[in-house]
Image 1 (cartoon, one colour):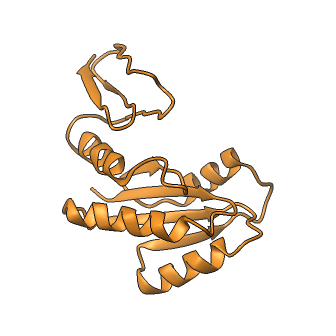
Image 2 (tube, rainbow, N blue to C red):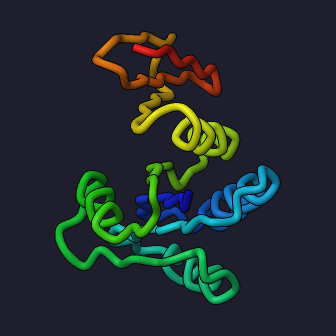
Length: 149
């Protein structure tokens, strides 16, 4: 299963390289080599695009997409979703507020257990709800729970 990561980014020069390197390292350490990381630069005024371009030149799995249209988090996510090529996609944050370990766990769940998974770092806990035979996934700081519903 090829995994696509979409990272919306605006003025993230101070942390984007560490975020991308952390994701690559975590994925490779977990034995996941078939992936792409799409960074959608959403009108950055700093060196975000230049930093991603440098990483892209060293690793073809890293792809910079420039949002030349209207800006905003949702628009950046949508642009990334229009360009991914994997079998599964995870939207993750440029500031690494979603940990690489969470991304690895999402990959496992999407590969082995569910067609769709949702997580939030804002939940104070996880809630499971049933709809037919799909799985719902909720997360809080790495506290993953799944339940067949």
